[in-house]
Length: 65
Image (cartoon, rainbow, N blue to C red; front, side, top):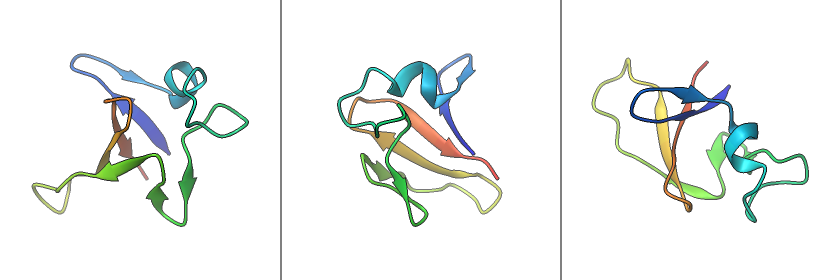
């Protein structure tokens, strides 16, 4: 499950990505084959940290399983 991580809150991508020109037709981030197509993966600090990405709009997106 993808979530938007901000300093003091976690949001669903639908609240943020729905207005993004890079989102898919349903207003979700372009997630395909385990990668965010509208952003880049950030380095992980440790193995217990979920994969994190930075979208082109500047938001941090985490893949929580």
